[in-house]
Length: 82
Length: 209
Image (tube, rainbow over all chains, first blue to last red; front, side, top):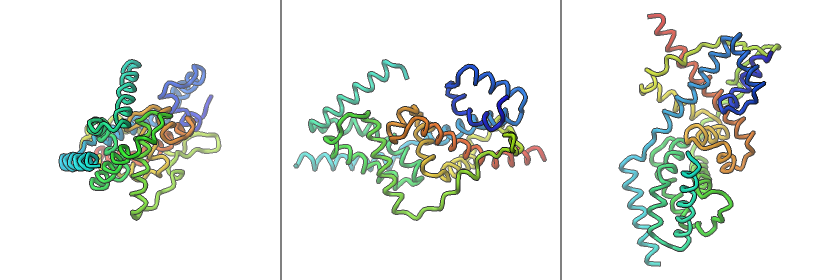
């Protein structure tokens, strides 16, 4: 049976669905007998979701959007003069 | 994203690049519209400062227009945009005083001689829903990400936050696929550990009430 260390090393590929069937089976066998690794698996997954949902919400603030528009406008005027 | 969608995106991108290389000023607006949010979000997540992210976004847009003739199409145009964004953000960060990074190894899981976990692992994953949208939780998460060492942080932002594929990230950063995977895994382990401290404390307070 694989140990916790090997189990945690495999988590990335496990979530990607990149493990071969045999490795996947032995990982899932380990989970059945190891509540700490299930807790680890769940919190590893949650961490990714929480961080993604917090950080991918970033929108350009209105004042920055306006500044960028003006910047582009000026740049285009300069280009036309050239 | 479906294969047809990817193909369409690629065609739109290639047409824009051709227009831009031909000096078509209309293409400026379309490029800005398509990419400014990606540029701003990535640089903001790296620097966590609105003014700096605005500066970087302007600089990157300008670089795209000025250097478009050096773009040879060896990689995807979007990869080129991400690379320029990363370089501009790092230049900006270099001029600022940096807090020392913590070593990631100290926060990786520890095992005994037989390879079994030594720490007590609490499963806090069930209780995060109600917490997710509180400002405190968001701040804790942002701080934890800010503490990631640069090498791991950039992989984490591109892969988990931007949602790019492992292959795309390896193209942008010029890393091998296994290197991207290993950095991403280390970043997640680091963040899990950081967030565990917060959620375990929250759960124990709640339990004690």
